[in-house]
Length: 367
Image (cartoon, rainbow, N blue to C red; front, side):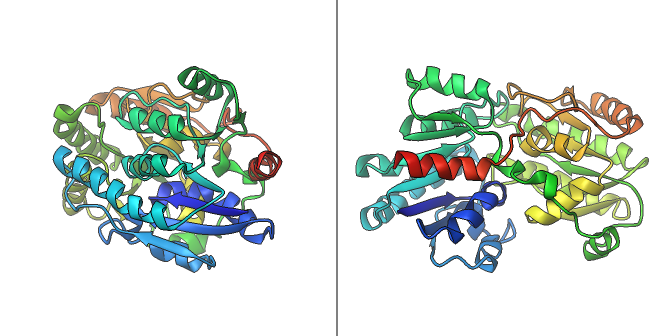
């Protein structure tokens, strides 16, 4: 069976990894990677190198992002991605193509394949992020897909309502948590030395723009900057940089300015890669920001999360999440609260055993 895998960012590639490793070893499948989006962006760490290091037999690359991140440029990048993928789908045929998540580039690639009858398997559909325009892209992808692998039963029910059908929808859990119980972090000293982290506790921070609140992002980025400046007086801060979202550069510029002001109290990382990021999560005291990893994965590492603003609003949450408004005093207050907690010992609502094996079993049975 010939399988294509669409990956447009460091985030979806990290989630895919357990499935990719199994597909690569299974002789039933002939797998090809299709890398595009920020994987080919120098500004975002050119993460194509991470894919190439994993030695897949075939990696297609499609460059379609325009460097700016205002609304017109994002729309233009969407259109360019559709044009590039129209050529790609005309010349490449697959029995099934995996797509994941909700990014605009992923939506564009998927929409381009509709006239060609491309059969898609969508992971992480049915979710809701009220503070991000990703809802539209995510549901577009679901509507175009043949198979649906969701993270919880609630998301399966939502897809069923969107499609007005219950066919080919499977609640399998979050793929990124596959074999999480067997995860072994990099040795603490090696990890700290590798990234020049001081020998002290740190908070792991990731902020992205609220793409449903375009007019507010300058205010939010400033609130983030001021809050992190105060928080850094209590605990060292490791920041992973924003993705290529609409107005992501506003947050990037605020972070770079903060680094210039207090270089000794923060560390900026463009791209950890999955194992390094999971190790960072393992050693971090808490997580701060508005990224999906705080919602999906942090509970499995026993970490409390300060989830800021509305970007992740609507996603099912475990009991490790502390929600707060996108305001400097509220962020500082919530972080102070989280720092008082020990290890989170509750459940992760996104965890199920053997996700990758379950997906492969379903694909073989249906196709």
